[in-house]
Image 1 (spheres, helix red, strand yellow):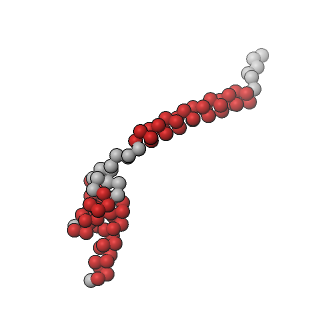
Image 2 (cartoon, helix red, strand yellow):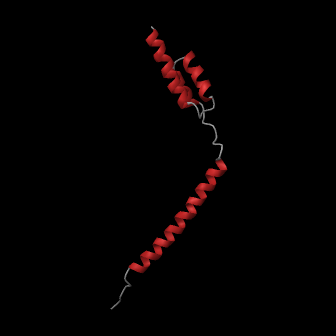
Image 3 (cartoon, rainbow, N blue to C red):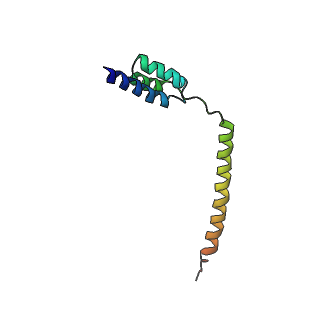
Length: 91
């Protein structure tokens, strides 16, 4: 009996760990999992949406910088490729 309760609480804690970024948060998912079941807690993880990232502007800026860097690298590689390719000779 004690082992069953310990396993129930451990499974609920594991599910709650994955609920940290959800709308309910760690404690909400933990209480939900303990009261109903860890399987119901997994269901709550699927149903409840993730919280918006706190640094959405920073992430968007990072993506923009990455795109610009990749464009510059692509242009540099295209220049190197043009220098390596032999010119076409027509006879």
